[in-house]
Amino acid sequence: MPVALGARSYDIVIEQGVLDRAAAFLAPLARGGRLVVVTDHHVAASQLPRLDASLRADGISVEPIILPAGEQSKSWTHLERLLDALLALEVERSDHIVALGGGVMGDLVGFAASILKRGCAFVQVPTTLLAQVDSSVGGKTAINSRAGKNLVGSFYQPSLVLIDPSTLDTLPPRETRAGYAEVVKYGLIDDPAFFAWCETEGTRLLAGEKDARHYAIERSVRAKAAIVADDERETSGRRALLNLGHTFGHALEADTGFSDRLLHGEAVAAGMALAFRYSARLGLCPAEDADRVATHLKAVGLPHDLASAHVRGDGAALVAHMLHDKKMAAGTLPFLLARGIGQTFLSKDVVLSDVAAFLDEERAGT
Ligand SMILES: NC(=O)c1ccc[n+]([C@@H]2O[C@H](COP(=O)([O-])OP(=O)(O)OC[C@H]3O[C@@H](n4cnc5c(N)ncnc54)[C@H](O)[C@@H]3O)[C@@H](O)[C@H]2O)c1
Ligand SMILES: O=C(O)C(=O)C[C@@H](O)[C@H](O)[C@H](O)COP(=O)(O)O
Ligand SMILES: [Zn+2]
Image (cartoon, rainbow, N blue to C red; front, side, top):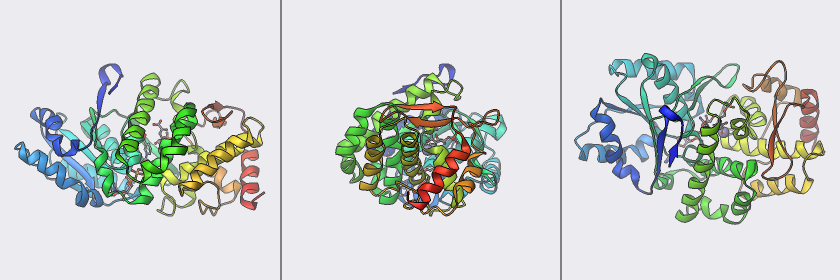
């Protein structure tokens, strides 16, 4: 499946077992230079041996760079360490840097590739559900800063995305569930039939049933690729739809100090439920739709309100985090709201003091 971006177009390959045949896709890239694989220590144990075996069988040997796992790696410290390691390997612009792992590796390695020698080619080999359905596609790269989530980064497209759903066999269930939140997101944005599919088939996906998993990955990636091709740099407002649940979600993540108390996908799940509840409170969206969203997220074991997301801060504290949102323009924060399931839109009419009051009501359970 192509992502059509003119000179920056690339292919997304979705194929069960493709990691064991990765050399067929990566060796042609390695011919113009070298391959440098960057991964985290969990993926190094569970999936790197498969990539390594495929490359070795093709006569390509790689010395991987292995980083700590988890959100904390999206930091200045680990960016600097990664850049130093890449420079020590004397990486050249014609080399390809392979990000093997979840969204953390994809975002960090993509950002490093975008600034190393002013831009080295990189390949995404996503190994979490979240990365396969969302972060590996579209070229958003970033690290977090003290001020908040993803605040330092670039738009930098990979030259290839290789998705092997079988890598998800080793993914812990909590991580699979977190990634599933971003799957549900596509249904909520503009595809109510897909949300209905999630309601009936989502548990099969979460159980690792191959047909459901493949279907959800392909449908999600197709939706994301179309949006990215239409609005690569989030200028027209279309790509901003992919931020559904993220203004709340990123504030919830910041509330935890980006700890694993709340994973990104979990924060997005709670954030989407809050966006629907808030839309219903504003009279924009039927309350039944907001209930349907929360009910499904709860049914699959995802956070669906402030309590289940273990949020500590009050409304004012959460809104203070939101002030760093990248959508902020001329002092107002455009917000993703919904008129119903599959009818998400960007509103410029949200008053942040009202959002804070809503969050306080939610905390009080009213
Ligand atoms: N760039 C984008 O468009 C975009 C989109 C969505 C999310 N994100 C970012 O992605 C990040 C979250 O990504 P994530 O949920 O993939 O988290 P992650 O990268 O931290 O991976 C989750 C955990 O699973 C482990 N893991 C990965 N693959 C595995 C496998 N196959 N088997 C066993 N363990 C495995 C990792 O080591 C880690 O411990 C967040 O920082 C978020 O902001 C970016
Ligand atoms: O690709 C996009 O565009 C998205 O918004 C996808 C989100 O799932 C992702 O979490 C993204 O990193 C959030 O973007 P940000 O611009 O709010 O940092
Ligand atoms: Zn996200």
